[in-house]
Length: 117
Image 1 (tube, rainbow, N blue to C red):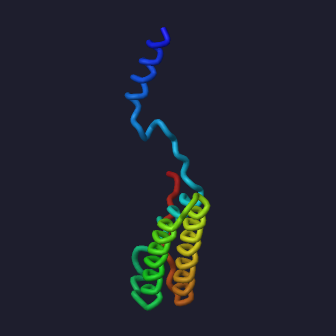
Image 2: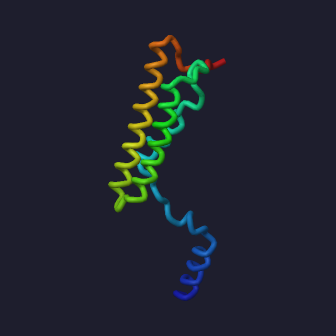
Image 3: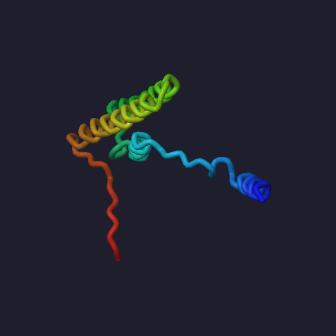
């Protein structure tokens, strides 16, 4: 009887994909960073490619490089959390600076509003 149960358990384990057997929770900081990544401005506000636009793009790329470097050097989960948190903060800060500068010049970030029909 015990051998049958053991064999059944082995067969059931073999049918489950390896990745599905363990649920790995994602870090909150990583999710926040991915949300900030999705908000990266892809084209210049108002179509104006000025020094602030190029500074923004350079700073975003520098933040990405710094994240990769920090994650390579991370020795534990806390280091990873710090890296993602810093990355999200930098992206938010750089976007805010660029948007604020362009708003002072009279240009706004385009927004789309959806209404329920």
